[in-house]
Image (cartoon, rainbow, N blue to C red; front, side, top):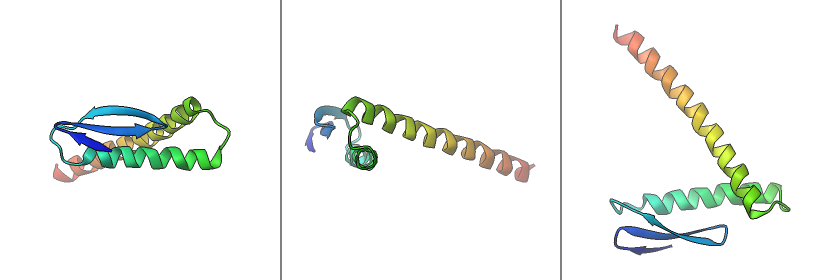
Length: 85
């Protein structure tokens, strides 16, 4: 991964992308590394999947995790709101 001013070059599934990195705090690299690991974990379990299917399955798994975390967050906020009352 190479940085150019406010853009970072990342490679995912053999494809390269320039991702805006403003401010340049290294989060793009962390995110790309996390995504690459998630893809590799799925690829290890399902070695015959195409790159497209790997990407879709990874996206679905991450969306599921995000949805669950948002639900947890909303529950925590509701609990804190009740405590404050």
